[in-house]
Image (cartoon, rainbow, N blue to C red; front, side, top):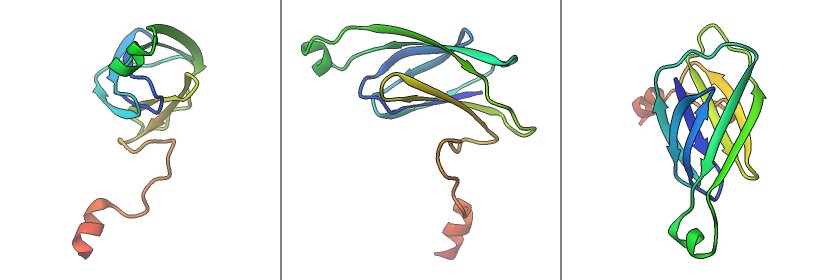
Length: 119
């Protein structure tokens, strides 16, 4: 499954990983989960189209197409989610995880249910 995050000031109209559609993303926002595709090999081609907010359109922004070939990160035995993170400057990172917690952020030290029970 593919999940995504957009940390750029521009929305993403659509993106693809090896031709598999990953959805669209608000500016500075998270994405959903797209199922199901099999990612094999050593590399992945990420293609995306930047969209624009109404304000950005008024200021003269235009739709932009981008593409990058990245190394596909090593996948662990329990990894199910390929995270695609768009960072400022049209930088893209890929990472695997066994769940929806981003591999680009520190993992929580306590489970949510443990925190709820303690209250």
